[in-house]
Amino acid sequence: MSRLSGISVIFDLDGTLVDSEPNYYEAGRQLLAEHGVPDFGWADHERYVGISTRETVARWKSLYGLRASVAELLADKNRRYLELARAATRVYPEMRTFVELLAAEGVPMAVASGSSREAIEAILAGTGLDAYLRTVVSADEVAHGKPAPDIFLEAARRLGAAPADCVVLEDAAPGAAAAHAAGMRCVAIPYVPAQADAPDFAHAGLLLRGGQEEFTARAAFAWMTGAS
Image (cartoon, rainbow, N blue to C red):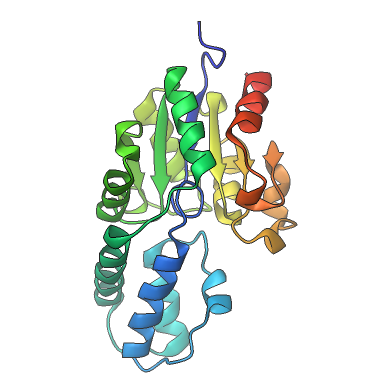
């Protein structure tokens, strides 16, 4: 019998499983430059970590007074992002090990991401993670994005799991808030370690303040074994 019997695991994708933020930043920087905003920097980008692409471009339209519609901006950013993502997306090595450990134990797993389904599937296929992560929910498939719990509750439904039996891995405060709202335990690995004191991370069952540099597959596995 598995040491993690009864537990299901739901992964955020961007910044949690893969380091896709540089690609999101570059896609956004290109888009904004083309629309007359030339000085969008990494510090600006960090404010949008954990927020869905649709919500991000809607905020940009308002903030920068962009003329294009939200739908046009979204399609443009997704197109640019997909080109970059297909060329190169890095999986965090310890995360790959963790996914493989869970798969060996027969743990049901899903991905719940604010990205488009096309982007999620392209990354999972390109990195080989699709061999393990076949249940996917994108923000486009639920009514409300993170910090609302909708996406995690839908992932649990598709896995046939009770929310209380699910553990979420997240890198962003809105995702940690969504996991808490869904009644799920959370392993928080802040993408921006300086944000580790954000109130939403306080609810996490395991908070790795140092982010990915502090995450190890064995430690997370041991914590979950104790939590089961």
